[in-house]
Image (cartoon, rainbow, N blue to C red; front, side, top):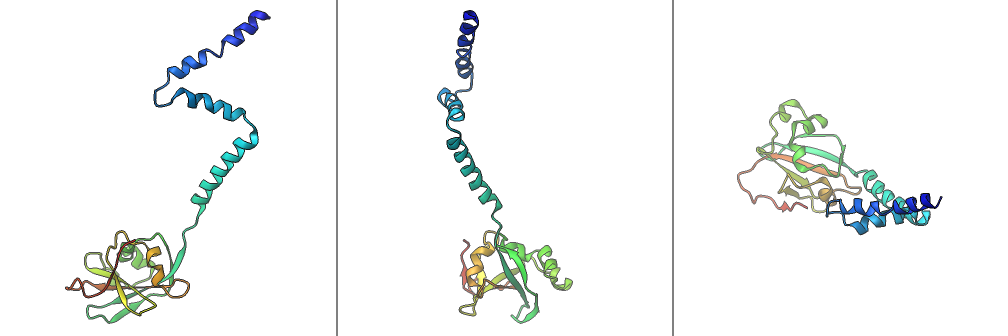
Length: 178
């Protein structure tokens, strides 16, 4: 029996040898600390784990906000030629996506207009509800709808205007990307 106890007591020393054979990126004190945390009071370890998992689940389960959005299409002299019904769009949508065929189809834009709209032939404006001015969205690729929401009416209804490109770059005030 004494020999069995001595053999059991001698078994832990091989564990440090295994730790030394690990890559230097994992220092032995961290490896030794992990089992101690598992043996400590269950409340501390479980509380820490559940707090971390609930924080990550809150971040991953956050549903993006949506904004009622209406698109207006102007012709080359600034006259309205088509207006969509309201549609809910997510806050993470990029402004450039509004000038794609997919978005045109979602808003049921007539095909003859949808076929001509592209980021290199058209520009996008947001109607500022406070001033009634059209503000050009300068950087379509990085501007998201959430940064345009402050220009909306009341609950955030956005009115976005698509117009053919103009010759003058400074014809309208622009909104910086955020």
